[in-house]
Length: 566
Image 1 (tube, rainbow, N blue to C red):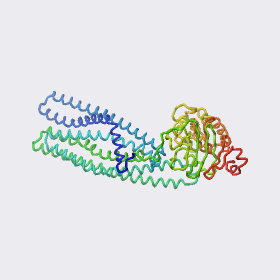
Image 2 (image 1 turned 90 degrees about the vertical axis):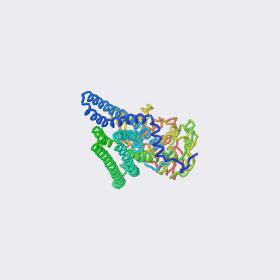
Image 3 (image 1 turned 180 degrees about the horizontal axis):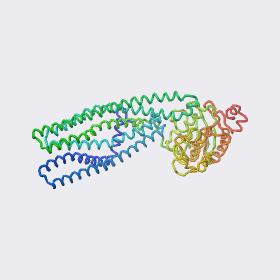
C-alpha cells in the first residue's frame, strides 16, 4: 500500500536520520573524545588562573612543578583526544559518503526503474558532492555537542568566580545562536540552488564532451560552447551569491563572538577592580574569554553546515525516492535464449513482430536508422514496457514480468556507441575481472592488432572515453567486451560502422563462429554481417516487410539491394 503524498515524510530529513542512525556508535565515541578535547582546552586557562593564584601565594618550586605537570597532562589530553576523535568521525563520514554514492549511482544506472528528470551529469554531481556534504552531518553533530560542552565548562568556571560572568556567557551564547539560526536558513536555500545550477553545468559539459566531434563536423561547436557559457555563468552568479551570504554569516558570527569575549573580559576587569574577584580569577576569566571564541565560532557555524547537509540530502532524495516508472516483475527468463517481439509500437516502430529462436543468428536490416535505434532501446529495457505497445519476450517470458537484474543477466544489448572507460584494454573487455573468454573475444572482434601494437598487450592503458584510440579501435573494443560477456542472448547494434570492409568481413565470420549455438541478433546494414546471418529480416517503416537469406534478398528484392549494397 502506497503512502499518499500528503503523508510522506520529508525525504531529505529521512536521509539524514538514516545517516545518523547508522553511525551512532562512531558518533558517540567521537563525541566523547571531542568533548574531552574541548574540556581540556577549556581547562587550560582555568589552570593558568589557578597557577597564578597559588604560585603568588605559596611562591614555592613544588607548586610550580605541580602546575607544569598539570599543564603537560592537559596538553597531552588535548592532542590525543583530538587526534583519535577526528579519526573516528572522519572514517565514519567517509564510509557513509561511500554508501550514498553507491546508492545514487545504482539508481542512475537503472534509468527504466526511476523516473528522474535529471541528466547523467547532474546525477554525477549528486553522487559526489551532495553525498559528501550529506555525510558531513556525522561530524557536525559531535562537534556541535563538544562545542556546547566547552561553553558549558567555561560558563560553570566563570560562575564559580562570579555568577554574573557565567550568566553573561550563557545569555550571550543563546543570543548569538538565535541570530545565526535565522541567517543559516538563507544559506541552505542559496546552497541548494547553487548545487542545482552547478549540476546543470556539469550535465552540459558531459553532453558537450560526448558530442564534441559531431559538433566540430557541422560547425556547431561555437553555439554549443555559448550555451555552456550561459549555464556556467548562472552557476557562477549563484556561487557568488552563496559566497556573499556565507561572508555575511561568518562576519556576523565573528563580530558577535568578539563582542561576547570583550564583554566577559571587561566585566571581569571591572569585578577585579572592585575587588570582587582575585587576580588569578581575572587571568582565568580573560583566558576563557579568549578561548571560548573558538568553540563559539565552531558552535555558530554548525547550523550552516546542517542546512547545507539538509540541502544536499534533499537533492539526493530526487534520485533515491523518485517513484518507479514501472515495477519490475519477480520472474526470470526460461533457459533457452529465445527472443520475441510481438506488435511493438514505439517511436518509429509501427508494430514490429519477429522471433529469434534459441541458438539462431539473425540480422535485421533497418532501412531507417532511427527504427534500429528505437528497437535497440526497447530490447535494452531503456524504455519501460508500459511506454510502448506490444510485447517483448525473453526466454518465453514477457519483459514486464521479469526483474531488471534477470533481464541484464540473460540479454545483453551492445549499443553502437558503447562507452569506453579509463583503465586498460583488459579491464574494458572484462570489467568484472572474472577472466572470461578474453582471448577469443579479442580475436573475434579483430582487436588483435591493437593488443599487438603495444608491448603492454592487454594491459595497455586506456584514457577516459578511449581518447587514445581511433574510432574503429573503440568500436572493436566495445564489441570484444560484448562477446566476452557470453550472454545467452546478444543484440549488437551497428558493431562495424567504423571499420574497413576487409576487417568487417573477418569480424562477421568470427562473430558467427564464436556465437554458434548462442542466440544473436544484429541490427545492421553491413553486407558482411547480413551474409553471415542465418536469416535477414527487413525492417521498413517500422514493420518487418521481408524475411530470407541475404543472398536471396539481394537476388529478388531491388529495394533491399539498393539499401545494403556498397
